Image 1 (cartoon, each protein chain N blue to C red):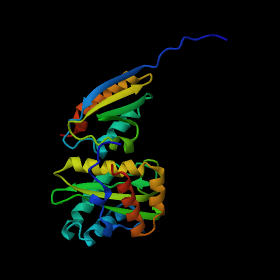
Image 2: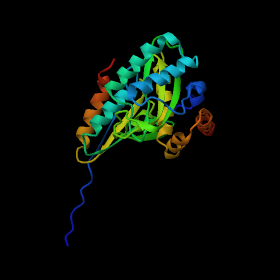
Image 3: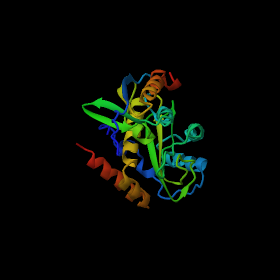
Image 4: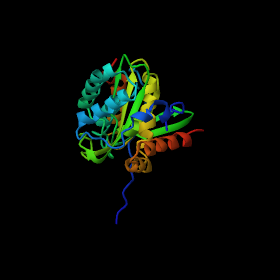
Length: 101
Length: 163
C-alpha cells in the first residue's frame, strides 16, 4: 500500500457579460454546450440574481433557463484537467457574441 | 430557476390552438399543423402562415430544438407578429424530430415571437424549459389526451409558481 499525495483538481472561473442583443437564446446556448462538451472538465454557469442560480454548462435545456438577456453577468466555472482552456474558450465565445450582433 | 416570475404559460399559450393528438408524422408537418392551428384560433393572421412555417422550419434545420427527453420547442420570430404566442402539441406515437438523443418526440411547444422583444422571448423559453426538465411535468404532459387536460396542467404550473 502506498500513499499518494492528493493533488487538488484544477479549477478556473471567469465573469462574462452577454453582449449579443438577442441574449442567450437557443442557438447560442447550443453553441456554448457544443463547445463545453469538448472538454472533460465539469462546466458550471452561474447567474447572480438575488439568490445565486447555477446550471450545467453542458445542458442546453438548463442553459436556456438562465434567461440571460443582453447585459446579463454570468460566471463560467470549470473543474477538471482542462479547466483553464475550457473557461478561456467559453468566455471568448460569449464575448464574441456567438457570432451575432 | 432564473427570473421569469412575470411570464406564465397562460400569458402566451393559446388554449384554443392546443393539439391533443397531432396528425403529422414528420418535422415539417408538425410545424405546419401547429402554426395552422394558431391561425385557425385567430392568434396569428392567416396570411402569415406560409412565412412562419418557412421561418420556423429554416430555424429548425440549422439545429434541432429537440434537445432530448421526448420534447421539442420549435420557434421563430417575425416582424409582423404583434404579440408572443405559443401552442402545445402532443403525439402519442412520437415523431422523428432529429432530436439530439435520437429518440422520438412526444410533446411540442411551438413559440412565435415578435422581433422587438428578445427579453420576453427568453422569459417564455425559460418557463417552457424549466418545466420540461421536470420529470413529472413531462410525464403528465405526455399523458394528457385532451385540450382541457393539457390546459389544466399548464394552469396548475402557473398557479404553483405564483409567489
